[in-house]
Length: 384
Image (cartoon, one colour):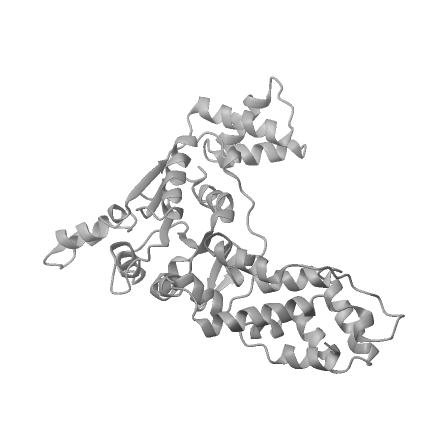
C-alpha cells in the first residue's frame, strides 16, 4: 500500500478505532497524510522513540492491550461473524502498517530510521483473547493496582513492591489470605476478609503483597477510601463483566455510629440489588475488632430498641466471612523479624543488634514488624 491507502485504512478502523488516540498512532496518521513534511516525520520519530525504537513491537503491544468491542464480546459470550470478519481484516492491515519503514514514507534520508520486524498480529491477538482472564485488556492490561477518583478507576503507576517473603513472622496469617485469594482466582467460593489487629503488624502490606503475587494470574487491586464506600455498587457493576478478578481494598476501616458509609459497606458484604460479583472480594484492614466506634453515651439515648441498634452496629465485623488476627509479636518473634530483616538489608548482626532493636521498639510504642523494619533501615543508614 502507498501512504495514501495506508492513511485511508488507518482513519477507517472500526474495532481498533481507539488506537488512533494513542500519541504514536496519531503521529503516524498525521505523517501518512503529509509524508513530505519533514516536521511530521520527525514528530513521529520523537514520539515513538520516547517509548521504543521498534515500531512493529510498539504497535503490536497497543493492539493486544486494546479495549474494544471484540475482546469485550469474546470475554462475555463470543463474537458474531460480522465482528470476527472485521477483526481479522483490521489485524491484517495493522500487521502491514507495522512494517512501514522510513523509506516507504519519505525520501528524506537524513531523518532517523525506526526499526521494524515481521510479527504475527493475528496469532498474538488470538493468544491474548485466550488469556484475557489473566492478562486483561485496556488499563487492566497495563496496571494491576487502582484507586478511585470521583467515579473513575485511576491506575497506580508505581505501586508498592511489597512481597510476602518480606513479611516475616506472620506466615500462618498470610497462608489464610493466600488460600482465600486462590479460591477467588479459581472461581471457587471465597470470603470477604477482615484483617484485624495491632498497628504495624503488616495487615495492609499483606494485602498489597497478595496483589503483587497474583497480578500475572489476573488479580487486580482497587483501593477504596472509607468516604468512597457509597460508590461501591457502581464499581461492582463496572467490574462484574470483566474477566479478571478484583479485590476491593479498604484500609484502616472504622465507623462512627451515624456514619452513612456503614450502610454502603453492609450492602456489599450482605448482597443487595446490585449483588456481589463472583469476580470480586472485599479485603479490609482495621485496628478495631468492632468496626463501629461506640461511646457510653450511645447506650443512654432515647432509642426504644437500643439493644437491637447496638447489636446491628457491633455485628458488622461478623459479616466478613473470614477474620484474620494480626497480634503484636512477642519477644522471640520480634527478634526473629529483626534478624530476618537484617539479612534482607545486609545489616551486620553483632552482639548489640537485638539490644538496640529492643530499645528502639520501646521508644516507638512497642514491638511490631513496622518498628523492626524502621530500626533496620536506620541501622543500614548508620543512624542508630
